[in-house]
Length: 469
Image 1 (tube, rainbow, N blue to C red):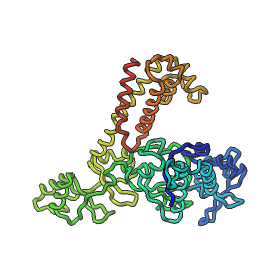
Image 2 (image 1 turned 90 degrees about the horizontal axis):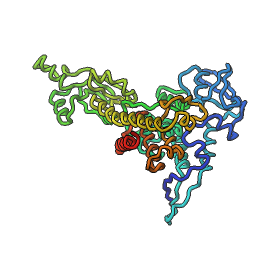
Image 3 (image 1 turned 45 degrees about the vertical axis):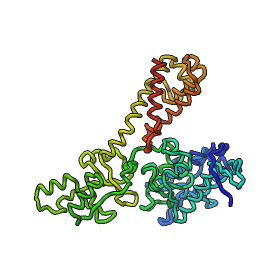
Image 4 (image 1 turned 135 degrees about the horizontal axis):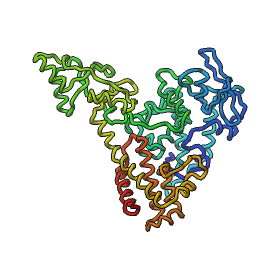
């Protein structure tokens, strides 16, 4: 039996062409898989309705009414007057009946075939080979698509999903990369891999041409992915470990002693009252027990049950702050509508607190770098380097980004003008690391930053203050 090892080996030209971005209609045209002027058809069989469109010379989709769209999904949504459709499956070439998705899959197969072939592992006599990253992921995603189509979707933890792309955390860029690769294969994770904890399990699901209620989550993810390369990253309720970590509950007919014992054993301030995994009847808290017994020494357990607030796992964290302020806790429903955990004010304070320190340090770093650049270089020289074709319309140092500071300080001529007795490549490498940290923080990476991230920010600030002030 041959063993296979994973290799992140050199990228081929084809890998640079597509790896990490979504396939577009112009890509199909360039590969000769479709031509400008091709007539497309979108049949809605259940409604006995057909829509037509044409591929323009620049690879856009032109509807019969003249509306033009870059995205097949957006074109299908507008043509049908519905909220969500996977246009890659919906549109077919009128003359051949081949869907745009089948052409996209052919393109992906061709690109994967052009990547470097599997190579023997050096020094290994057992026949083991390394499989380049692009080819390995392509094979995994093709299998996942086949299983999704057969009703047996792949289940995988978010951590293992990230590992397939050589990542350990859901940074801004890698999350976009993963979503693009999934979308290219007509897949989306359910629940969304950005919206749960890193150890949560997700399914790789495809969707029908038009989403049913059950497939709405995957359909929406695919449609949005097709429409935009810049999906936003936000903290959701499900990103907090306690949200999907299970819930301690008692039945409505429980006793005060049972609830109190559970709260003492677990150091909880409340427990859920449930009659089933989906049926939340309320909660009992230390306060509600005290109030019930104060009102009547003979109070029953039911007298201490209070109304409990519930949020879905994919609710943005900021949207439950007002509820948490009043109630101090919120129970969480997962993608199967099960009560999956609880979020308290302490959990939210901790989550935002972990972001606060690097957030403020990044602000200080930006100001320190801007001072160095402004003191040393004319704005004209900076603009010439960072915005040579004036596409960004830069006019002042305030328009500079972290990438611009890096570009300036990595430039040999600019560095010589600065005159610092430091190694330019080494500083440039650290600035690149800080830029990645900045992107993760500003785009609310749901996973903890590397343990050394805050230290790197502080040390960079110390260096800038020492040499720049």
